[in-house]
Image (cartoon, rainbow, N blue to C red; front, side, top):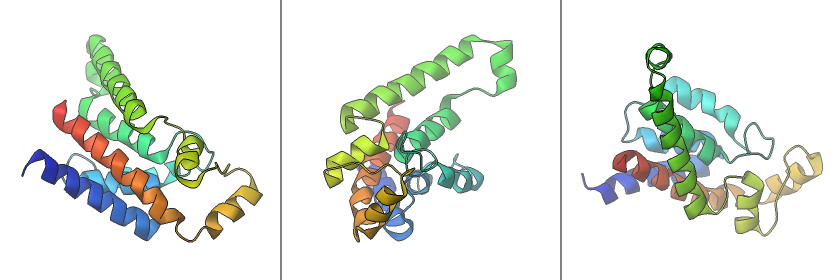
Length: 163
């Protein structure tokens, strides 16, 4: 399988999951799991809580936080190993910061409301009931967010392949 085929596989699966489920965080990991078998089902299940900007708090985008989880699963040493060799924590930090920088360069921000501005022309603060009501009345919001999910999943997959 070529790199481009892997990116298409992951990106398309994530996009389809987002359109179907409207859960950006989980959709990202569903897409990544299409190729990267180190992602456990338990993590996918738990990741639902990170949608809407980290628990519907309008913080960091679920695609970013779940990309970090995938990076952490691949590069972070088990705690017992890190305690024996603290330099392993430095390697993990380098990886997640490199992913952060790649995400920022490609997406322009890690924040859900800022990404919303890019695709909807305004942000929606999910801790405000009136914003939630307006947002969920946008009939194609899941499809518009799917574009972000697909792009971010491809970005993360590429990072995991290159590193």
